[in-house]
Image 1 (tube, protein in one colour):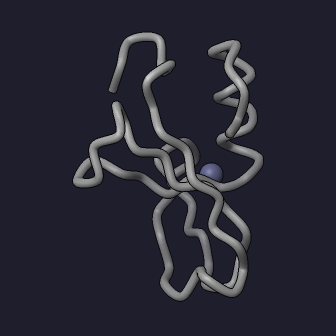
Image 2: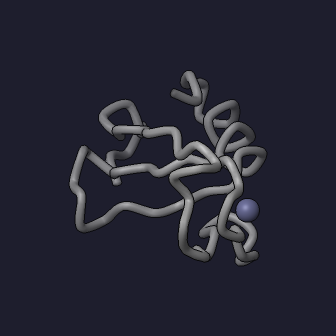
Image 3: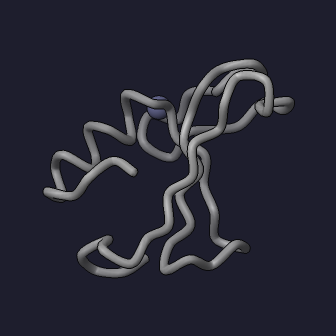
Length: 69
Ligand SMILES: [Zn+2]
């Protein structure tokens, strides 16, 4: 992940597009299918993408001082 996160690529996953269950790296909780959330690609690297809860990512973005998306 970029040190400042500024090069991270963030994608919104709409409920209709969320078909799997994911583990959020921030809280170690599951993101259930059908839940709006974010996918974050560190430095735009697809293989390193992680799925975040909406609230978890927005807190993290705020902590880093960046826009959530
Ligand atoms: Zn979370």
